[in-house]
Image 1 (cartoon, rainbow, N blue to C red):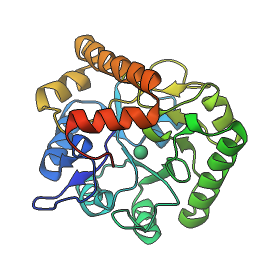
Image 2: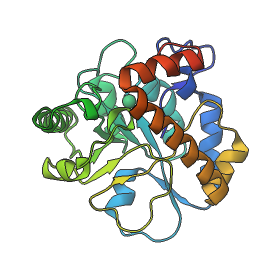
Image 3: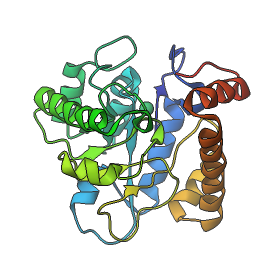
Image 4: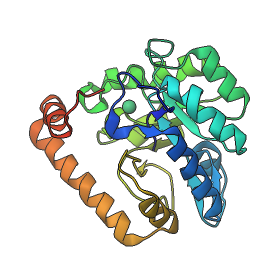
Length: 252
Ligand SMILES: [Zn+2]
């Protein structure tokens, strides 16, 4: 699960530095994944096939302009595809990719998927509002891109109980959250895990992830548990304030 990718010398204004990866390092990640022997593809197509053997899905949240400018060329140069989870309300605004840029990515095989309509956290929406958000996001992306939207990634990884069932009822096939882990077994009515890629990820840890090291996975899961408890104890607003103070930055 990537967020912004930063070109050399680009300030990437407004993006959360904790989740921003320099483009050279991102290119290194792609080459490591390709050398791992796993099938590397977008989650849309990996989840639609009953493939066996190791596989790595590349996903990007938030629809940053850097996905079009930086990540897209590096993926295309390697013949790779990825999923880009976008918010229709943010498409074409400052710092975010436009519909025509997303269409160009889709035409080159990239998968454009739903990150909700406007990035409001799903655990703060009434059920009827959430249902409308999911339908509106999927409808607008399909209308602009001209391809089916099958995947949903909840903003901030906030997945209220029953989200997978609601997503299925509103036309999605799979929900990808941000609980760290590997996808194994049935992928039906549940929120699937993803591994968050943060700025401090080094190649040794990425290699261990690609090898499926249980130790590294346990460490990522522990971090997620601690952050998840803080979110529940503090509530979303207060959590963002504390997190920003700890990491020394505003939340993007
Ligand atoms: Zn997001």
